[in-house]
Amino acid sequence: MNLKLMDLLLGWDPLGYGQDAYETEVVDVLQAVHEYDDVSILSRRIQSIYEFSFEEVIPLKVCKKMAEDLLAIKNEGTCEI
Image (cartoon, rainbow, N blue to C red; front, side, top):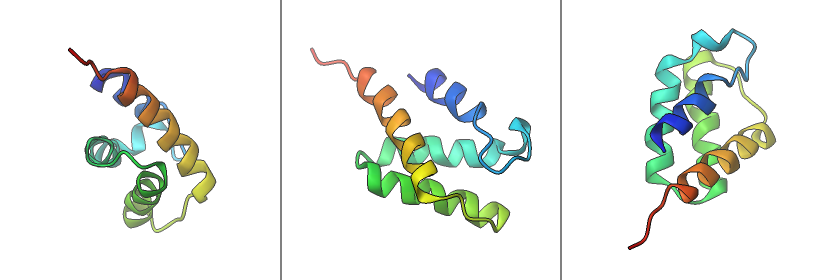
């Protein structure tokens, strides 16, 4: 699951700086995915992580789409015994 999450995040270039520009943010977002299960909360957290680093705001609807995709991966990786 973590590899799928990382692949998705590493392929995301929301500010147009190139995919290699976001390594620190990817790690922070990965941690947030494990902390939050709510799309609204996660999308705002994603937005704030990138805003803090780059002083640019990613539109919330863009962050929401990413949060939905990340939580879908997280939820498909959940295994119940």
